Structures are given as C-alpha cells and as structure tokens.
Amino acid sequence: ITCYVWMTGFGNFSFFYVKGDYGWLRVIQMLWRLNFSVILLMWTHGNTWILYYICPMHTFYFLMVYTIMYTYHSVNHSKWGIRSKLLLFGFAIYLVWDV
Image (cartoon, one colour):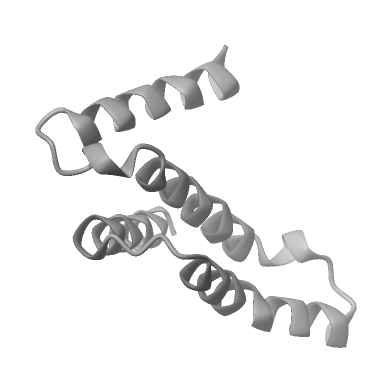
C-alpha cells in the first residue's frame, strides 16, 4: 500500500509540475473521484469512513501535494525552489508528527 500511495502522490506532483493547473475544478474532481464510492459504500453498508483507510490517506496526501505545489508556484521550476519547498514541508511534517 505504501508504494501505491507514493506512486499516486508522485503522479499528482508530476501533474502539477508539468501542467501547472491549480484550479478548484481539478481539486473538486480529485476529491470526488477519491471519495464518492467510499461515501456510497458507507451509506449502503453502515460502515465508518476510516474502515476504508486508503481513501482518507489518498485524500490527505493529494491535499498535501496540492498545498506544496500551489504555495509560491512561481518558484516550482527554479533550481532550488521546489527543493526548498519540499525540504521545509518535510521539516514541518517532522515537527508535527515526531516532536
């Protein structure tokens, strides 16, 4: 599952890096695609959302990649721009979850 989540995140990163499409329509389409079937299954089977843990995880990582790529998107194609953003966000994740 870790490899699948990583590949999905890399695919989202690649899309934002190449296309540069940060519109709300893209966000809504992705959130709908990731969560519609889960919501339907929850309602029909009476299960909780966390039972389908892969979908909340993909939703979180999509929003995380979107946030990283959208914030100061003008520096995404500079030599140190995207590297700095990824390093800072990695440090922020470390502070939130490990400190």
